[in-house]
Image 1: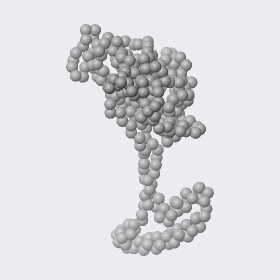
Image 2: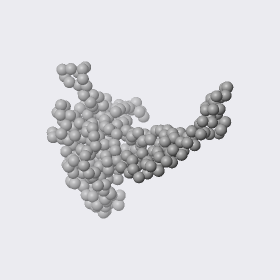
Image 3: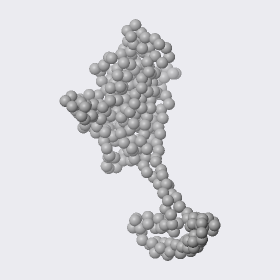
Image 4: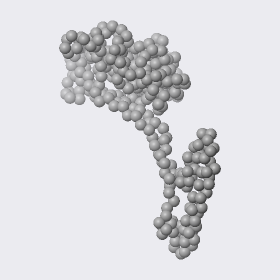
Length: 334
């Protein structure tokens, strides 16, 4: 299968040439240059792998979904919640002891009433065939569970992208082969030459960006560093046809990425405030020195969230041969 030495793989071949084309009116009054919506996938091996990187550029796919959520459970607080003890406990743990005495008095009164009811049930349970639960039912009383919702953490985000590629030129055919070969290769773990069956290295992480031309699309949410968790490829889904050189007529593939860790609100603020410049990869969960995933939230103040601006200009000429990866330092030294 063809392997491209070019670190930039672009499909279709003229994708970058579409940047800067005139608008539908032909007057080009929308700010001089018009970027074509596209998606960038960049993968880089760690220092052990020589820091080799690949950037794949494809037209923006449809049906891009973001799913943000949290895991919630329940807890039964019982009598202490009914007496207001939990609220007081929260105040005390926050340093406020003013309500502790009053709450204790109220709790004592409620406990007395509760004991009276349960004493009746206990006495009744001495009768043959009657237990405390049956006695409480006879009194039409229940011990309230005082159930509350608990927060366990946020959920891990996953993203799925689907593409169907049909080559129009020989260069497009080679690009398609290089694209699915690259995705397939970096789905797998690495191993050392001297002990390939003893210890495996994590697969490399990916950086995913939504672009308008050569700049990041500020109207799309940002994605944290990801692992490519699954890659599926279908050849000639519509028709069983091959070209004279043996290349399939169409190639469809589905990519599923999983972020390297569960995010916090600080992570989201840092991502959404990310316009570019130094430090960007750190906030995407990428160690710029090693190329590996970071394992914790960066300390310090969050980046202020900026609103999208229609006046943001591209950072370089639209007629470029190589896409602009920005100044964030990923891929690192190469």
